[in-house]
Image (cartoon, rainbow, N blue to C red; front, side, top):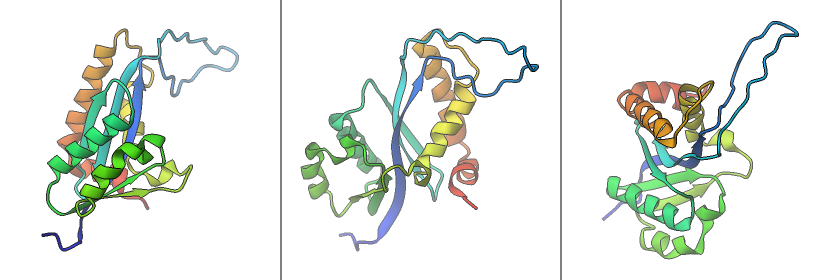
Length: 177
């Protein structure tokens, strides 16, 4: 039986790593700026994930779409990975996070799982947003990918690398001064 204490706090969000070029920073001589064409087809890698701010653990799943069924499956997976103690999930107010489909699952698991919604228009309060920014900086900024598998390969390599360095994750994403 649980004593009602919170075991962990997880920050949850979704992100799409698109196939079109993201020109982040470039420098040109004044008056000689180049035009950089982009040719993406708005395909990419769709992720849903969590960040444990205390341990630096990152967990991500890739899906073809985002909907309430996918989010429910993600919550089920989250609980199976974290079966002991109460988990508080901090997330935004996306429609899929409030879907009726979730109600019975949340009721059945209320001693194990609590959703805490951030105020509208406050992505700066969701620490996992920093993960998506970091991932995009390292994987897609100033890079052209011809195929989605190329993006997927580099996204997975990035996630594997930083998952092996939880202290670096904590320092970069969780320590706000």
